[in-house]
Each structure stands twice: as structure tokens, then as C-alpha cells.
Image 1 (cartoon, rainbow, N blue to C red):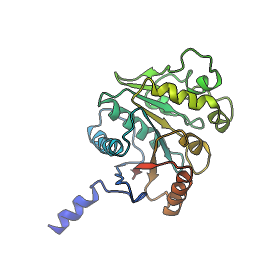
Image 2: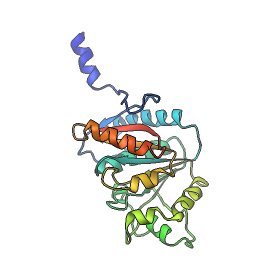
Image 3: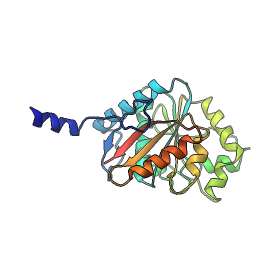
Length: 232
């Protein structure tokens, strides 16, 4: 019936028109969602976006950046789910917490944060250049570590791009969780060394003009937005 069709339409995954040339799929989960690796319903939605990512990025050992317009814990949650579903396809996945302003992936995965990205950026002679904490058989996480210096200054170090190449030699998929892209330059700096971007949008809070501004801002650096996650 028309009423039933309308009801089903509300729960259907739909394309979000950020780029006309790419069929971008969006998924939804609630703002106060907590990461649950056993949540089958949520993971099924992330499998959809992972399949969409793979169909648009042919390159192996790809680096993806996950960012949002404004700071939200759900950016970390979305990053964690993406990393998890990629790893469940038996890909070696490294998820890096590059949000040096409000690190949170160590809390999501309940791991130690004393050693991490900042350790490697500040000490290039460190022998554990690809050291990361094993979360599951195929999933590894590199937390931020202690943040001592200005984040933007750290992320512009040559060591950052060198690390990317070292990670590619050991992992099939690299995901970088970053701070928001409206209020800081961090995401733009990181995006320059990434193959593609997944953008997290808060439905009803992130205005269309701001979304378009961020799209233009990121694409001016030739960054490619290939997926969106809608937080409802």
C-alpha cells in the first residue's frame, strides 16, 4: 500500500548528492550511539558503504580519511565500524587516531594511549615505526599518543608522509580518524596524503551551505569524497 511504501522509504539507504559522478551511499545511526562490535544491524550498513568504497577505489593499500564538519564522537565510532568490517573481510587494517585535538579511538577500543602517532612523528629513529595495538586478528589500531605540540605543526612534518608509505607496506587498508574540518586545518593537511575521504554529517545540525563549503574546501586540494555517514 502507499502507506507501507512511505514507511519503508524512511528506512531505506539513499544516495547523498555530494558528487554527481559517484553513487555515494549514506547510512544512519543515532547521535548517542556507542560502538558495539557485535551490532549486526549497524555492521550490515557499514558493509554497504565499504562495498561502495571498494567499487570506487581500485587501488590496493589505500589510505582513507574519516572527518566531520564539527567535532563528534560518532566520527570515531564510524571509523571504528569501517575498520571492523574491512577486517572481517580478512584485510589487514590499520586504523590511526590522527585527531590530535580530541583523541578517542583508544577509548572506543579500550587500549593504551601512551604510545602512538605523536611518538612516531616526534621520534623518527623509533624502531617501531609500524607498531600498533592488535584489536582483532586482522585489525590494528595506532592511537594518538601524548599530544605535546601544536597538532597542525606535527601533521605537516615530513615524517607523516613517510609513515604513510611504511604503513602501506604492511596493511591492505589504512583509515585515518581526524578532527573536524570546519574549525581546524588538520583534516586538509592529512587529506593531501589520502586516496579518498569519508565525511560524517549530523542530520539537522550540519547546514547544507556548510556541507557544500567543506566539499569545495576539500576538493580544492583534489581530495575525493567517496562516502558519507549521516548521524540522525
